[in-house]
Length: 326
Image (cartoon, rainbow, N blue to C red; front, top):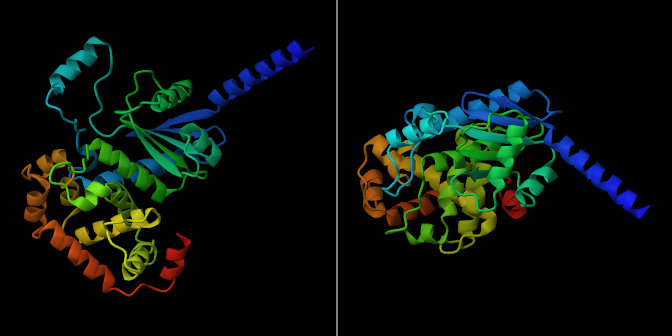
């Protein structure tokens, strides 16, 4: 009797797994393949929305937008584009994408996102295909194939987001900015790196993503949600020598806002991407010299100016509550 119970349980588990594997639908766009639960509302509008956000992110940061071809990371032994094209053709694979090509999984259940990523509490995540030590990208790509996506589909990375209605512009903008950082091979300089970035590179990585959210949606109150809490933190004696985790993203976004007063987004991105420097015609210099020539002042002078700029603006009503909630 006990063995029969175990058999029935095992069969039920297999059936549930099979049902889960078939409970997703794939919706392609020009640069994305979206994976949505079968019961997802308005699948076509959700896909169009995600494609629009990607194009706006690329258009903000790159002079040619989505027409900018993918960059390849160093080292110099990377095969030439011709060699890669020949190898792919010889293996019967399609040509490499000529622009961005990413997978996006939108979840209706946040706990399913947490189970997939093993990261409790996250609302979104970007996974690069360049580095997959746990095999998570490989496993999730299989879910795309089970939904009917061709085996030779090439994704440069995957965006995962809790987006039950398909309308989550800020979250998609944030995670697709991380996709763009991967696409443009962003590197926090390891030689002659300012100590603030050496201690906390997420000031750039996450600050850029949060700033993009607000740059693409003027309705959000940057002063209330970012500048005000950062001003209060500085007023209470905060310094970049010890950045608190609860305000790290906002401090980084504030730095990007101050940079944007003098530099265009492509110029700012070029500070951290050798590939983009080449696109915008900038020399490949060590960070201090590059920053000085592009910004017109040293990094240290920039930070002093940033602190004075933030401190000169009184926090708007409600900023203290936002700060305390964080």
